[in-house]
Image (cartoon, rainbow, N blue to C red; front, side):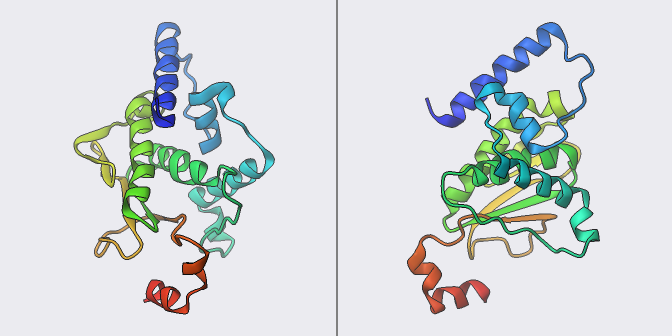
Length: 196
């Protein structure tokens, strides 16, 4: 069973338990970390660095960072610290759940890698969107690399660096692992290609 299958299984189990007992009028999760906590329970760890990233993501989504004069966020953490899972999986689900008319574009060094995050976010929103946010993923526009929300028009698109995003508009742009390795990062030719 893949990690994504395991996550979906836990979400289904929690949804079943809540359906049996009702959700008690619980409001939607207030942040991506709260969403992950509600879906995964004790499996979700909340170390201080993810709490900090979570607060910054919520402030960005609310417009507070823009009001303070910031145009974006840059998170620099070593591999394996949970930033991609928080930023590419839980944040898109939470953000689209709370802003269903907005679009998120997620870009990575390779199209299938980027689409894997789109797939995870779509699958979680398919499982819990109605329960947590009162929304659902369209059945006709539901590919891992491009999916939308019923009646609201928001959604998520993914692509590789230089991929097919011309003419696409997004309210949130996520660049995660857009550089494949240190060799590419050190190459002036590759960096100029990204800039162009």
